[in-house]
Length: 232
Image 1 (cartoon, rainbow, N blue to C red):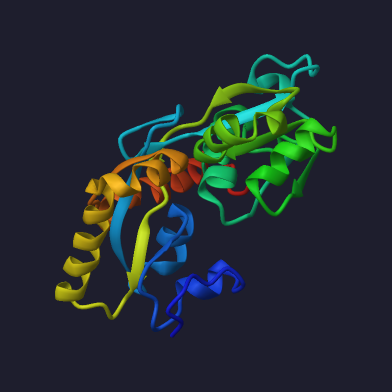
Image 2 (cartoon, rainbow, N blue to C red; image 1 turned 135 degrees about the horizontal axis):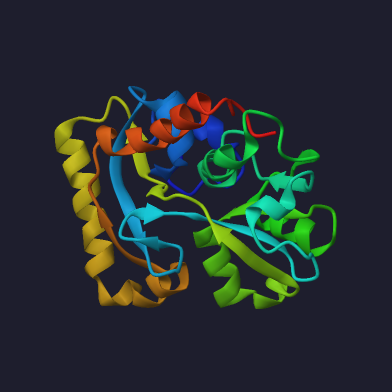
C-alpha cells in the first residue's frame, strides 16, 4: 500500500483494491458493480450550477453554431460520451433521451471520448454534435479554464441523482470508517484548506446510504421500461 496519491493506476482497478483507504467513484459503477465491494464514506456537495445538495445533473452541450435548441432537435446527431459506465455521461443522458427515442436508436452515432473534458473538446472541435458532461467538470472548466468552453453552449439539463461518492474498501470496519469520515470533516473545517476547497468547488459532504444511490439504477430501469435499454 502506497503512502501517497496514486495517479497512474486505472480508476476501475483502484476502486477494487483490497487496501483502498480513500477514493472517489462514479455513482453508476457504484450501483452496478461496486455494491458490497466498497463502503460509502460521504458524498460531496459542490458549489457549481447543475445541482443542489448532493444531487447532480449533467449538462447536455452543443456547439454554439448548431441550430438545435432542444434535445428533440438532435435526433440523428453525433453524440459523445466519456464512458459507457458513466452516470453523468451515459446513464443520466439515457434517462433524458429515453422519452424522446420511442424505443428506437435516437443518435446517428456515438463516440466514446474517454473523459468529460475530451467530450467538451469533441463538441468544440466539431467531432461531435452533442455530449453529456458532468456539471462539476463544467464548473471547474468555467472557473479555471474558460477557454476550453469557448464556442460550446448548454442545451439542457438531465435528471438529477446523487453525485460521485467517496469510498473505501469493503472490509473497512465501522471504527475505521468513522475515523476516515472524521478526518474528512476536519479537512473541510480547517481554514488552512479553504483555498484548496475553493479550487475544487467543494462546499461540504453528506452521508448517504446505499438506498439513496438506488435512484440511479431506477433511472436505468425507467429507460428500460421505455424500450431504450442502451444509449443509441
